[in-house]
Length: 182
Image (cartoon, rainbow, N blue to C red; front, top):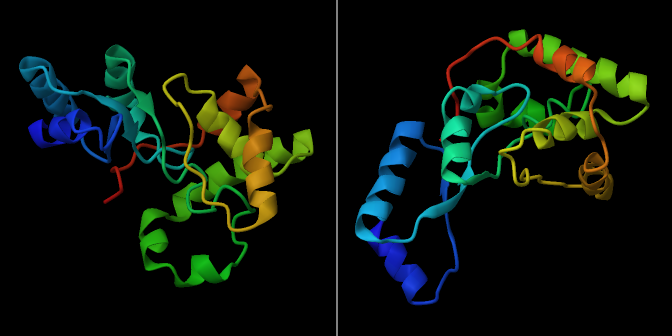
């Protein structure tokens, strides 16, 4: 933490962000910064989507308490929440990292996103991103558009407000699972 603080003091960076760690590790790092008067983290880059919600157990409570924003990576679950389940893509077929993140029990989640999207007449990506954005801890999801319409969907999601019934329908199929990540 001191080395990171030195980088801020030297003017090389303005703010510090952390990524993909356990809540207890993040708490210890923030405590060390407080104890020594060092620069604290202002953001946490963590995996969060309708298919990976384990950050809700401890991390989001800690972030809210500490005034730290979440910048989730893979909010569309590597594209699995942007298209109907079973749709083949070259990336889905050849990405060994993506394949280890997902299982058959994720299909009901993708199906729920598809139902809400069809009922609203909007792309699935907008629904999945709107759900991520409805969490008050989320500052901004990290999107990785590879086509112009991907970026357009991400921007359009900012204007989608899900109803409580839609949120319930989207969250209902989730089952607890081990966190994944790097």
